[in-house]
Amino acid sequence: MENHPSRPTNLIKWFDPRHRSLGTWAFILNRLSGLGLTLYLFIHLIMLGQLAKGPEAYDGFIALVKNPVFLAGELLVVAAALIHGLNGIRIGITSFGIAGGKQKQLFIGFMTIAVIAIIYFAIRMFAH
Amino acid sequence: MKDGFDVTSRLGEGAGLWFLKILTGFLVIVVLVIHLIVNHLIVPGGLLSYADIVQYYQIPIIPMMEIVFLIFVVTHALIGLRSVLLDLRPSNILLQWINYGLGVLGIGSIAYGVWLVLVIVGRG
Amino acid sequence: MTQTWQVTFEIFRKKGDQPSFYDQFELEVDPDEYVLDGVERIWAFKDRSLVFSHACHHSTCGACGMLVNGVEKLTCITTIRSVTKDGGVIRVEPMRNFPVISDLSVDMTTFYQRMERVGQQPVVSVIYEDSKGKFDPDDDLLRLSDCIECGLCISACPIALTTSAYVGPAVLAGAQQSGDLNPCVLEIVDSENGAWRCHSAFECTEVCPSHVDPAWRIMNLRKQLVSRRIKKFFGVK
Image (tube, rainbow over all chains, first blue to last red; front, side, top):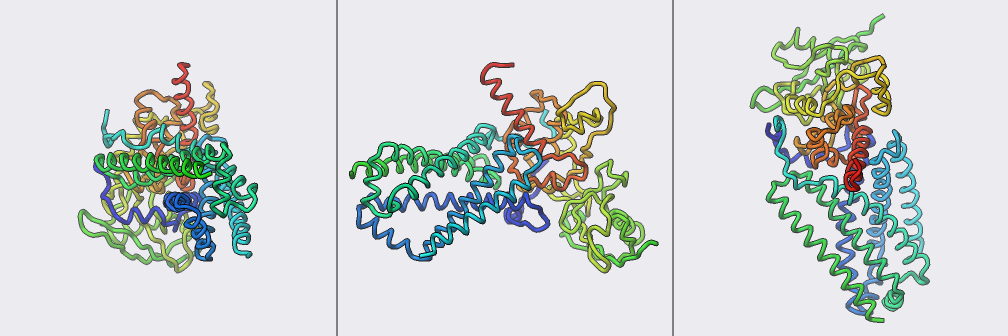
């Protein structure tokens, strides 16, 4: 039996939440945040290379990233990390059958915590 | 008894990699929490200048923690990335290239990170 | 007092290699009738070339699974009232992730072969099935097992969407239900196209019309597989 025909639209369907329920949202959020964080990881590693160039390079870099655009980007990273981390805890718990049937409630609970934390960090970062 | 089955390539993500992904994920959370608390809350000034960082890295536990963190994060990120790529159904040959590429990227990143940490420690 | 609604059915059509399209049929229906009744009336009185799978019409055979307004449903127990309103539209499409034979009928051959291979038990003790495998008394009443092999879970699964090599929730749930993890079964479930491929979207449990809870069963299966491996590692039988 051959694979059903490969359609490019299948890829986009990963991220299509229409007609789907909460679990798909978790899947989509986890996948997007994971990919975003991986990209950020490598950018971050490269940027830290600035440290090796000495104090002027690094301190100049720090001055640059106090710019609101960069701060917004950082907030996005924090948000992605919170979502991916909390969702990951949920996946880890359910994967070993510890959560019982409560995966939906876990998702709602964790995402609420994530939203609160994101708002907290946003206020802290932009309040000055 | 292979009726109705694709021949499995055995190059996908079996129990070992999946378990490593979950384990490193959990470890990342643990170390990340420590990393954030220490880096941004305990340290006075928040590590925003070159001098602060060099001084901070003189404490032996710090570079060790950062290296361990790097290993866990890179492992988790690349296994996760590989899972996503597997869902794109690469051919066996392409998958071997992906494995190779991710392996090089992973080891390269860890080596680069360790080098960077040692450079900073050495500046003190 | 029965009501009468005017409902438009948009039916997915596909014959052979022709491009697919949607046919519109206006029907007068009783909203408490089922979607399958509407499809059958269209076949009987409007278009005899419409092909669709159905048999028992009472949620036991698992033949009539389809996409109704984009959501997986067992059409013989899905009332028209629950998916639309008077004057509304019902879009009927075949299940995802199976090859389409014709119109609304899909090819379930590979799926059935896999279900047989994992040894899913069609008749089980009541307490064993109700407890999802926790209790296994020998002397209990018997009943038909929950899974009716309708394939809706596979249609809803985002991983099954990307590859037909992934055996899918029903098959993994069947392996967990059979309770017999012999090497033949392990070869497919303890593999990269088996239990480790699931990404916890939980859509399967969401659409299952029969209380199988495949997502929970996959997680329980993982627990069993992990403890097997640990035991093997330490040489415990």
